[in-house]
Image (cartoon, rainbow, N blue to C red; front, side):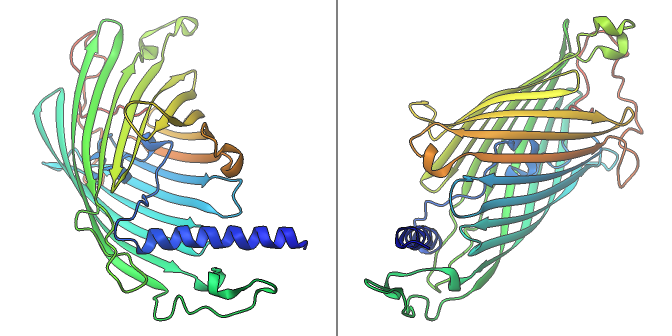
Length: 374
């Protein structure tokens, strides 16, 4: 290896080690939880009130590879499953989240398992309120052997010394975590729309600020505030149209996500569309509502594969294009999601055991107990 390449490798590892350690030990840490470009596929990750908000069972597998040009791996693997329970009085649903997150060169790994539950209040046929809570067990580990600290380097011979930086430090930490949230949903019909569904939610994570320090000094994880909202315009008239050539079925789903943790914030806004089994979407991500600086431009494409009337598999891919000057250094971000939906599943009886009445009247408010997946 050339001397220049060796120095670059040492510098890269040293820089990333310092950033990771600052995130882990600073009491006013600017570090954030994992965020997703396809946040609409992972709503209960952001807010447990979404648990069971759609009819039946939904299972989702998500992979995110962030900043692929860096010599480090920032990978996230997430599995989410939730089940609606409309036949159990007062119940919204039950869910689970299993997540594994790698930071840097695999030096820091976070694994978590979360159970979520929700309860609903139905003041009207076309209005729904849901409350949710989540309980997590989190395991974080760190591999000190791959870090390069300044006291390990010799100006002439490079990495030759032992370090005293991590004396007495832990290599793993375990802690419980809590989240809570509330969701409001309104459902309506219009002359040219089968259904119009508006949803807005407020969620909080890390309610009790768990200590995540490897150093034995208190380092509280900041509370995270999440506000999400979307509108679904569903023109699903396919079942009523006798001539397939005249089918005008489509769906539009504008949405936004705002998350704030400590001094850091993210704001995403955009729209997804669906027609002829194909999904597409355009999104912007910034760190302020003013859009004075847009950080990422996100493109999404996907396919819906139905198996009968109540079962479907969805595959979606998104590409994050960095708009700032960091583009050449960090590269792009890729995210892939695989979603499985089964509408008529329920632990306490079929979710479709009670007819919803959809399609029996030309216009009128649809029931918010019905399925409105995008």
